[in-house]
Amino acid sequence: MIKALIQTKGQQMQVLRPVLKRDSVGSRKQTFHARPQVRGYVASRSMDESFDGNRQRAVESVTVYVQGGSDINITDRIKIDNKTFEVNSKRTPGMRTSRDRLFYHIISASSNEDVS
Image 1 (tube, rainbow, N blue to C red):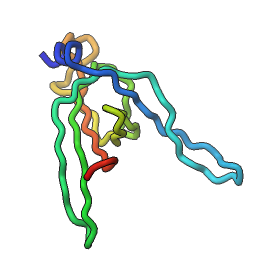
Image 2 (cartoon, rainbow, N blue to C red; image 1 turned 135 degrees about the vertical axis):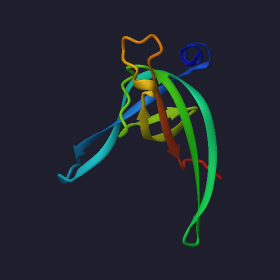
Image 3 (tube, helix red, strand yellow; image 1 turned 120 degrees about the vertical axis):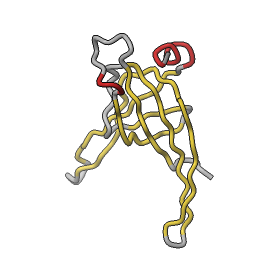
């Protein structure tokens, strides 16, 4: 059923991978380069507001199902609906392998971009 949701209701998502480069004065700077897109189904979205000292902090979290074997690492970012999310975890349920026809990954990601 999850694989069918990915295929029928899923959307293309851009994967952004971190790369360290040297700037003009030799300091190392982290940038993100686009990787091939993956197809994923956004299973849930939630908002959380909290306080950090006297500052209010809002975070949007998503859970995404992607096809098994998708090239996503926990250091990556994914772009969904023009919003960039930091990948927090990547799990494969039920000890499935690439030979299993129900092979998929569960990605948890969060963003504080444009959250009000």
